[in-house]
Length: 294
Figure: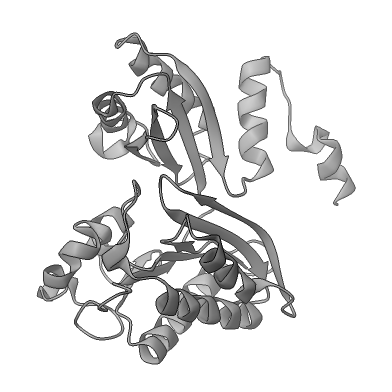
C-alpha cells in the first residue's frame, strides 16, 4: 500500500525532519520520497508498506504534526484546512481499492479518537457524493472550517463536531495514483495563472481528471499553474502541458518550465515521452528497467 500524506509545513526544516522521522527505520515501511515547498508552505511525503505497519507510522506522523503545527500561524499559497491536510491511501501491489478504503477508515477512526481531530472521508472512502471531491471539503480552509463544520451536511465522519484549535481538520481516503504536476509561466501576474487554471480544470470545462489553481511564486518572481492529475491513465500529462501553453499564448506569456512533486508512475512519463518523440507502437515492456524488475 502507498500513502502520500500532505502536511502544512514547508519552511521549518526542524519540524519537517521530526514529521518524516515517523517513517524512517520502521519494519515493513519504506520512505520513498519527501519534498517541501516554501511558497506552498507544504510537505508531501511518499511512503509504502504493509498495511498494518503503514497504519502505525501514519498515525504517529499525524500525531507529530498535530503537536508541531499551529495553523493560526500558517500562511502559504496552497489551500489547507489542517496541520495534516490530506492522507490518501493508494493500492499498489497485492491489495485492492477495497483494502485501501478499509485502511483509511481504520486510520480515520484512530486519529480522531487519539488526537481529538475531526476527520472527513473523501474520494473512494467518501460517505456521501458531495464529500468525494477534496476541494469541496477544503473550501473555506482552516479559517472557514470553524463555522462550516457545524453545518449538518459537513459533520465530520469521525471525531468532534468542532475544528481543532490549532490542527484544524483532516481528509483521509483512498484513491487512484495522482500526479502532482506544476507548470511555471514567465510572468509575475497571478491573474493570468488563475485564469489559465480555471480554463484547463474539469470543473471549468477543461480536461477530465484535471484540477488546477494559480499560484504566486514570489521568491522567483513568477507564477505557476499548479495541477493535480487524478487519473493519468485517462488524461495524459502532455495534454495538460499543451493546454496550458495554448492558453498562455493568448497573453503573450511563455511556459518556462514544469515540475513533478513527489513520485510519478513510470507509465505516465512513458505516455508523454511517446507523444513528444512520435513513437509508434511503443509500450512499457520496451523500457529496460521495467523488464529488469519483472
